Length: 166
Length: 103
Image (tube, each protein chain N blue to C red):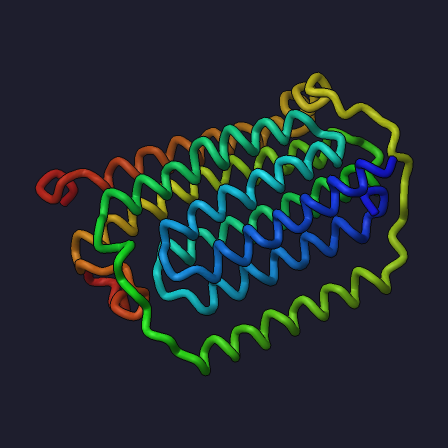
């Protein structure tokens, strides 16, 4: 019981540190690496929430595909990493105040709401997910596949050479 | 601590706020995209927390998070190709230099 709490606290620290580094560091390449650290933490958090399948999907899709695609894009365009953004102190302070205010409002809402806690027992299995995807959630499932097709075609059109694109 | 709904919701809110701060401050488009990923992940965490503690049907939240992950993949592929296109056209991906839509 004790060890799970320690690991949970370490996970929270990893997630928040990774997120802060992903936002705060100046070099975009380090931002992408910190994003990977944060996503690993989120994947481990999904195991705490009883869903091993989503943890695996998080690692495969987010880390294996999305983060690697971002890193490829950074490396394909070399000057992207070397651009240093000039400091705009007023903007940073305004954004920090706004984000802190937003977090404060959210924290107030979370703390003051009486959440209707239901039973934690239930069917978390991959079998249940598959059944739901192909029965009650079949329409969103099909729409998602259409969106992915459109995204593939759109990315191909946008990144093809100039004379073919227009 | 790992057995209460509110701790997960606090993590989610913190992650969302950090992502919001990143979207507001960074001017590099790729950095903004990374912040956007943080926001999507915070929403996934809150969905999964509600799935464990509130929903009766334990598959529903997981299905929603699968949809979020699929949409994030589509969004990143489009956004990265747009960013590379902008980089080819303007030689910069600073958001301040992309004020017109004429390319």
